[in-house]
Length: 427
Image 1: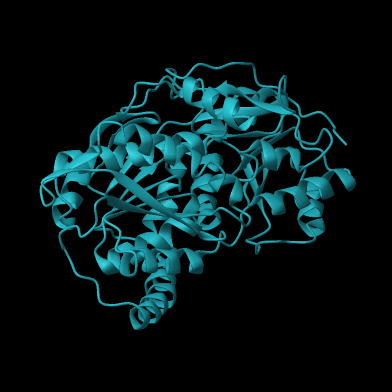
Image 2: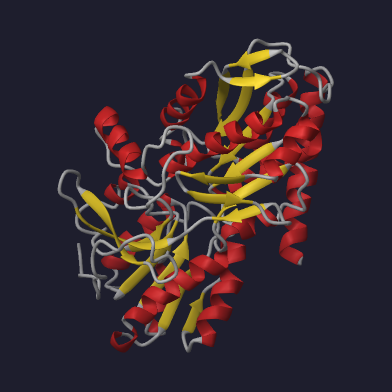
């Protein structure tokens, strides 16, 4: 309760009110449910294009533009106020991976640009402040790619609908991977929880689930972003005989921790790390062979058996298009960036109007197969998407590839390799 309340105070008092009051002095009042004055539908897209979350934001605007092009091929979406089909456009604003700037960006998109709908994704640091502004100004908002628990801490929500996985699901995933080799380790887990919504929501859930299955948790406490020295943490892990490391960190912090661990002779047999090692660029930044065998969640890949509701193209085809055009390996956010606009297009088509209350109701009634799976919101305004376990190995075309090594709860997504244990002592 205290976590939820502190998060609400931060979002709905310090960020929300400060940004709203400041923006209100600059821009005219919002006119609710006004008919479209433009010749197009405008979607707001706050995106962490720079900063420590830039790996999440990298595929924008490519994936968004691809989805919008598919929507607009037949002229766009019929809107009764206009009496015709209107093409869809979006305005992307860089949040610089900063929660306050994300809230400011959302406020300006609503009040100055007068967007018709908001689409936002990429961790609670981006999603929650934008969702808070959408609640304040009664703007329909579709959000994805932030753990449900961290997103819920900013609620309750009326104007926001969300899709991603829960911390319960990722805890089951990580513990499932530990259990797969339980006869080879001592079930002692050192955890790395930052002082952010993810760290605060992951910690208690992981502790409860892991201890119930006989694991010992070594927790040295929450820490701030951009830690320079993890020596005390590493020392505690070594002293307690930690053989598994688990955490949810921003990339710079895990890079620091993992390099210092190896420098100080700490070699755990397994590391299950959320957020920090999702993307090839972040993995490559570890340098050398340090990424070999690291485990992480995988929430979308070319192996996921889902198709676009707009074109019918498969997850694999979308990944191949990205690689062909960008000469880069696929990343999980590509699918979610695309899916956000699938959900938006579906809701707009069914609503046939830009009246915000009608559009909001229509979003809530979504029942759609997308490129990231089926989206159908519950009474808490979220829809769960599937998870599998991924492991980084030396790549064929690119320096590193992620193989799917665990799919116990989602057998429809095939594994592509066996889990490697223990981690090699890479330098």
